Image (cartoon, rainbow, N blue to C red; front, side, top):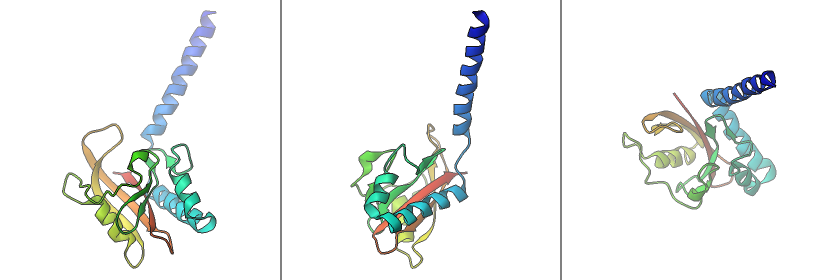
Length: 156
C-alpha cells in the first residue's frame, strides 16, 4: 500500500512538473508568424467569421505556450477576437500605451494599414503573471480584402 502511495505521489509530481515546464517554454518569433499566417489563411479559405470564431476560442488552435492570436480592425484597432480577454471584443484599444508611451494598437493599426499589410510592433508589456513590463514583439498581418488584422507576440 505504501509503495502505491509513493508511486502515485511521484507520478503526480512528474505531471505537475510537466505542466510548469510547458509554461516555461515561451512562444518564439517563428511560431507567432506561423500562427498569424495560419489565421489569415483560415480567413481566406473558410471566411473571416470562421477565422474570428476560432481565434476567439481560448481552447482553440491559436492559443499556445504563453501566446495567442488576436483579431483587430486594421484601421481603428477595434478588437474582433481575443481568446484570453473576450470582454475586449467590440472595444477600440487605440488609447492603450505601454510603459514607454508607445501607443500599441495605433502602431498595430499603422502596420496593418501599410502597403505590405504586415510587420512587427515592439513595446513593453508584462509577461503573464508578472507586473513588471518586458520587451514584447508582436507580428501583425492584414487579411487581404478585409479590414481585419491578426496578431501574436512573444517576449524577450
